[in-house]
Length: 138
Length: 129
Image (cartoon, rainbow over all chains, first blue to last red; front, side, top):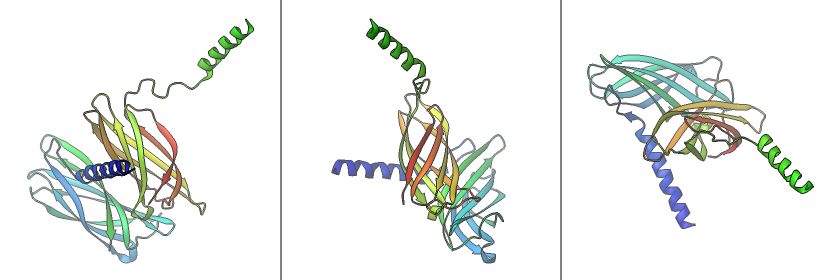
């Protein structure tokens, strides 16, 4: 039984580790990362203002497409926003105002899931990388 | 003689009507581990292993549908790319709830999964916290 529990623990650690590493990736255009730093509820839940930290090679461009999905009682709140910026080679903040889809509920404070699809392009190539993370709307 | 004929007929019927092998030409296998709720039911993390006798780059597409205790439907899809090297990898695909439905909750749900090179999976799973 102990061996089985130890096996499960190792398995969970491996899976968690691989998931955390997924935020950064080495691609043809060079290494790039994104990570959501803050997500603030605004306009009575009509939107969430997301600030993410993006890193990509100087001279390239990065387009981030962020989708925030959250539960609000028995409904779902969801919204997307995209933005394109020039890469500096260092970590840089990118702010996006994510408006809710009117079909769904309004955003409330609490946990949510965010999918960030980044497209990093240089003179010769583009890489598209998707990353999911759990965030907290404040 | 009758017994021999009956046995032969049974064998032919079993071969003709029996289910085809699920992995006739698939070399990759999937082991589903856990399906856990994330972000208050806004998503489900599907934890699975991929066994690949040969190195493979591919995609995993997962769909989950759940009829909640209150009768509302929660559903969503997730998509992931993977590179399987040296025989096996562990993977997580996050299934995000559809804005048209309700959040996922603990309990049984239906999962459909299509992974490059593997036989499709369609089975009941238990969503846990």
